Image (cartoon, one colour):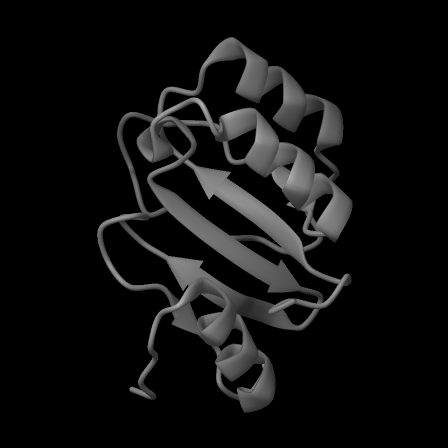
Length: 121
């Protein structure tokens, strides 16, 4: 897995179908860190959920029948030390991983698993 179990997922924006909204509300926790919004208007929810494998798998199963844009416009993953991954304009632009926070071996293994390449910017 790319992330440690100490991480939190934040999904910003999008009109989420009620079933996804309810799932995120049920799984959400109080924010451990403040994440700046990328979208000023319209103001949308930004649920913070633990980024543990079981929750991520349940979320993946739930959103499988929806468009990716029904999930979020921007995606962030953070831990108590700061942002680990950010994906503005999710599903259209590349996502960015904090090289000083995620070991290169994890990034390489993740990219191999999903059959994509990466470059250090």
